[in-house]
Image (cartoon, rainbow, N blue to C red; front, side, top):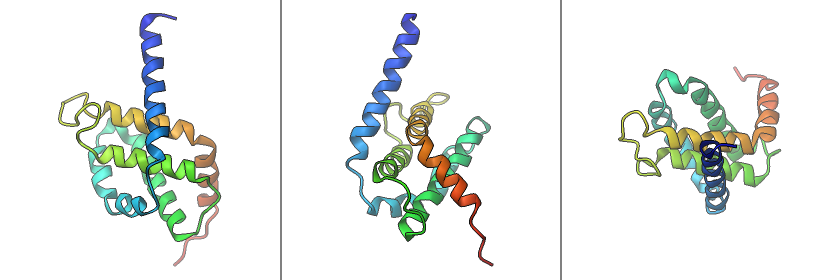
Length: 138
C-alpha cells in the first residue's frame, strides 16, 4: 500500500471514529432540527456533483420523519444517531474544512455522509424496501 492509500484509509478511519463518538451525543429532539432544516441541507449540496448524495439525504430525512412518527422503528438507535449526527455535521459551516472554501469546502461533509451511509447500509436498504412497499395516502 502506498503512503497516499494509507493516508486515505487513516482519514476514513478518523471520520468513522468521529461519527461513532459524536453520534452518542445526539438525541430524539435533534430529529426535529434536521427535519426543520431539510431545505437548507439540500440547498447546500445542490450541485450536480452531489446529485446521488442529495437523493440519499432526502431518503435519510424521510427515515428520520418515519422514525419520529413511530411509523418505522425497525432500525437500531445507533443508526438513527449516526444519521442525525451526519446531517447536523452537514449543517455546520465551520467543520473540519470550512464550507466557505471554494471547491473543497464540502468534501468533508460528503465524506461524513459517505461513511454514515456505509455504516448503516444494511439498515438503510431495509428502510428503502419498506418505504417502497408503503401505500401512498391520498
